[in-house]
Length: 201
Image: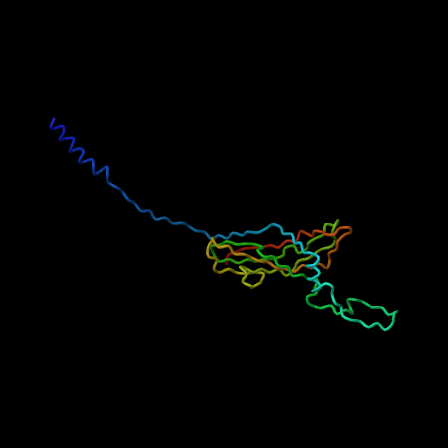
């Protein structure tokens, strides 16, 4: 009886350190982080300038003061308004500068550049409510409201994927070749394309 008890105590004493022991290992973790840029964009935008906006853009004011003209007799003709009137060179123009804020956004973990281009400049009338074309030209962009407008702009410090870079775009719209087809009061001219390209540099 005493031998059995003693043997049991010896077994318990030898087993106890093995059951309570701890093992610790440290594993180093590495991540291969590739270059990445994400472009957010809208696949279509419809501009809705009011008649007042267009009058102001073309004439600078409404009505337009064309100056004075002396008529020597009641039978005299006024002649050509375009040739004789004192129409201001600025802001009078067939090109209306159009700026769209937040046209696109970019996230990137590497320095990048954005290039904008007009791949289809012609906005066509549907032939039912509108005829002719409105054309786009002179497209430029800026990043993060920095005031530098160009066809290609660069961001050397993107600050990682957590930072969103906002891009604005501006371009000219030439309304001189567009007309409404009566009795329509508005018409949508479409199918012009502005392309935005993001690339590393």
